[in-house]
Image (cartoon, rainbow, N blue to C red; front, side, top):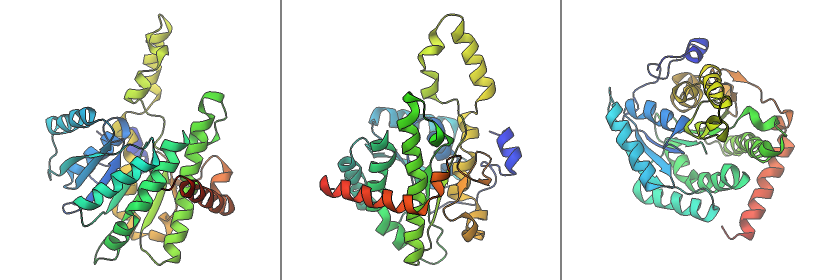
Length: 293
């Protein structure tokens, strides 16, 4: 699982995170792609990881694959959590179900259009925040919230504009949530990140790949240019578990990580706007109030 990205950053997600035994982590979208690879790294270091996914069949297949590929050296536990982010009411139910199962939550990783990428994760995080806060106040705790954004926040192509706006919302949500936690003196670190352009299972279902002549060329280019899911997990794993983050909390609070796990700036300057972050937060709460969530 070594990679060019890991060499660039100096961080190897397979080796450079501490023993996570006793830690409880939730990763949404963990049944494939970057989420799967992230979950795999964390479970191999001993964490109990909840795989948040809508499909039980796909979740069980992912868990079977994890066991087949091995969860050593520390053999953590992977548990399916029924998370449907297509509706904020279902997202809240999923979070409430989790609260009946666990007494702590050390890391919340959100990796999944505006409803799925912002509003439902907002509800999911808000519902779990009291438990995250409780865990953060325990001795020697290290609680983090990781939001997977993207450099697609600058994309205004018709097919990707909505996705880009939702990822901008992820970055703004990170900024405003960190501000609120700091104001309440809660020692939780919130990080947004761009995992890079990753050759995921979803990308491989692109219709262009089955076209004659163009398809084989596209598959070759994807394999050369794009990162593997394991490489794409470098920044998420760093954000979730690298000791350097807790060692320098003021540096990493509300930071935006690049694929190499180095701190960078979002390509859209709006992602740095404190005013826009607050406006988004307030607007989201107004929408949820109308939905009675």
